[in-house]
Length: 118
Image 1: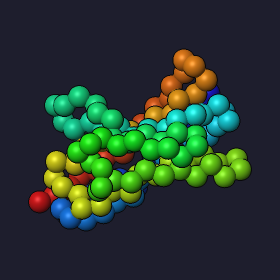
Image 2: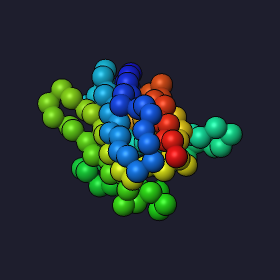
Image 3: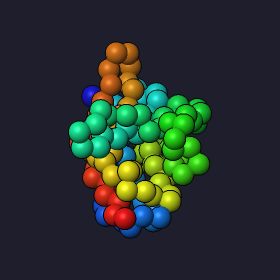
Image 4: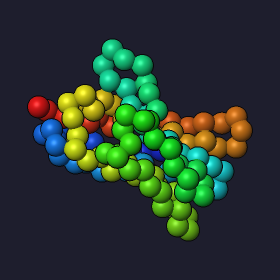
């Protein structure tokens, strides 16, 4: 089992920045890729970014350049970050962390709210 806890969400004015963190605990050795998703009110959950165990990254095309995903795989630690710059009101959403464990297991965090005011 893997537990994920997100933090770093909050309120920010348009143009500002936030850094989200997602700390994994439990069977962290089983984790391969990690992801950030978001879900805005009335919309489907969408993939924001992903990062593989070796550090390869992918981004939603619309967010590339403003958002950066990174990962700390230091001993006994597995934390993924999402640096969000030049935030826009349309970035307002609940942001979720996901980890891929040994197939077919996937684990989700509880989400952290990001609100961007105009």
